[in-house]
Length: 279
Image (cartoon, rainbow, N blue to C red):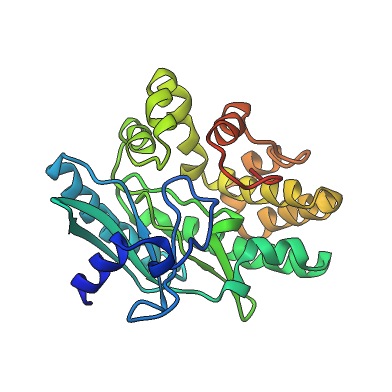
């Protein structure tokens, strides 16, 4: 990988490096260059830290997390994590093989027929169930964030592509702090410490097998409320077929269309993060 070319691309203006491919992100706005050696890559640039020990740990945890996802059977594009020196400090950068724009699950869920979207839910659910049924082998705290916007659908299969923050090894309190440290929004870093307990709670769904499935169903219900009944029916059936270990908790969460906590939707609106109606 040409690190000098990557560094020049990151510090270039947006017209040179390419416009962001998504504005839905909490941590950064990924971009894909229109041309050059990184034209087939998506580049994600995160906030740097002055704490070198924390940066080294972050890099190690990311490598462990990407390896764990693959070991657990999660399809993941080729993904490299770098601590790239830029303007006197090391900045976390992820370089990932780009997936086709037309394969992103969220817009496909918006445009597809009901049957097509249920098939996409099955594909995403398969990844969720596969991960959690294989996660016992990791003797450490590990989570997963399989939201609709973190999947692509390729040849009928779901491909997951979100590896930041690396949901492995960090304690609940440590991850809560990371949600503030690496937020792309200065307002969140300023306001967040005043409501640290609420911010810390954002992650809890990612570490619960049942809640990751319920979260997927809830997101689909909010994205296409007229099809909510079909998604609830699918979710209950899928739970009984593929996630029996967590059946009681998951079914309890799908009695009616799941809702997000009010404090999280409030944060997203305060920060101007796009994503309605499935924030």
